[in-house]
Amino acid sequence: MIDPVALLSELIAVDSTSARSNLPLLDVLERQVRALGLATRRQVWTDASGVQKANLIAQRGGEEGGLALVGHTDCVPFDAAWAGALKPAVDGGKVFGRGAADTKAFLAAAITAASRTQGAPLQLVFTADEEVGCLGARRLVDEGALRPRHAVVGEPTRMTPILGHKGYCLAQVTVHGAEGHSAYPETGASAILAAGRVLREIERIGEELRAEADPQFSPPHTTLNVGLIAGGKAKNVIPGLCTLTVEWRPLPSQDARKVLRLLEDACARVQTDRIRIEVAVQRLDGGIVVARDSEIVTFLQAESGNEPGTIPFGTELPYLAQLGATACVFGPGDIRVAHRTGESGSPPVNRAISPARRWAGTMETSGRTASLQRATGMSTTSTPTAAQSSRRRTVRPPSSSSGTKRIAPIPWRSAACGPCSACSTLSPSAHWNVASFSFSAASAAAIASSPKPAMSSGSLPARRRAASAGAGSASASRSRRGALERSRPSI
Image 1: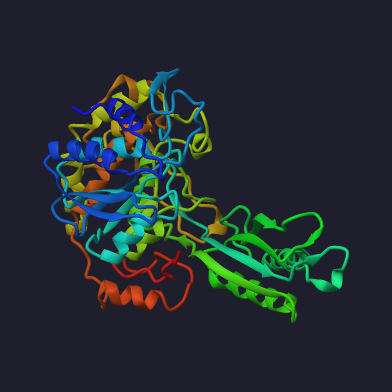
Image 2 (image 1 turned 30 degrees about the horizontal axis):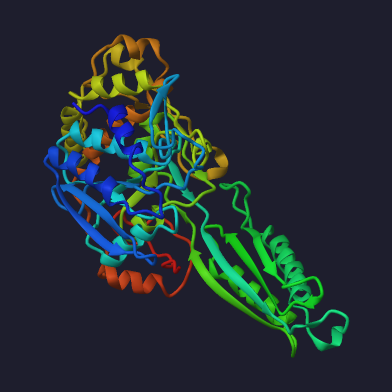
């Protein structure tokens, strides 16, 4: 039986920072999934720096329909002084090392889940270069071969189902002036002073964006930031060049190009006969929000007991939506301990192992029952016993401002689960960690076995062409297999 903590430690020991090839990590992952009988293939390419990268797709029952568990293999760089970055250690019930939270814990949990269910179709998708622009996920969309019905995008959300996030857009503004001796201002045109006028325009745009708000997010409006500025050669030279790096995070309901147009218009107002300004787009990723009452969200909400929410950082969720999947973001760990020295998988190890082992024998019964219920529209369970009723928990209803329906009480454990001391002594929230995610994911495979609804008309490439015509919001309230129209981000 796979020990997810041992597997997590093995994954941490492989350096998979985005600047390096992820093929060594894929070798470890592929060995694990092939041992489970999953078929695999790789989507290989060479990045702009000449480094080989790949996506690994492992599947049981094909790449169409079913459930996909999707996690990225790359990590952010680590401080050279952190001796333990690639030497995983278990201390105080936590696993320490680069990627422990973001997002190798999810990779270990996904493989563990696959080992404890025979549900199909099931896909494990391990992508490259998420940290530098979701480049691997973009290639999955370009190829169009993977088309799951449901998908869980792994990120450290503390086992909270995530409905969506804002987009991410980036542009470089280059201001061209004319150099000259600073003692003779009329001999030149200061690019830095002109850039200062652009900065004032950007500040004004930021204030205007506050008027368009979405209470699901914090802050509830599109944000705008100038993170980098560079210019000038010497203190006594009129600067002829100045560059600004501008980022904005648009609401899902807002066209990602709106701020770009406002920025271009502002730069046009600052231009003169001696000042020329260029705006070069580097990323233009729209935001996304999926339906709160979708099957995958309500399932994960019931299993975790956590109210769905949104996050401020980007993920691969929009790309799974473009592939037609009903998806959400979900996984073990806490993003607040990621991307820093001392990163750790936050769940206690002892609680991480035992819940998944308890559940290992219940998945197939649970899966067949769920499938039959969906196929017939009838319940196959009898009136619950007092013991079963005592194991029920009420899922907290959405706030009235969400506009979504109340979700009825759902058992947080399968009716097939027998009594155990841990379930009676630990609060349900104590079970949601690295390996108990394995239970959730294995249970979710039951969803994949239900009949697949008819696809909406139009091929996937046609849907992508339609989506690229405009950069609007993404909403998964449409058909579970229908195209989720949104702009295809460019980089």
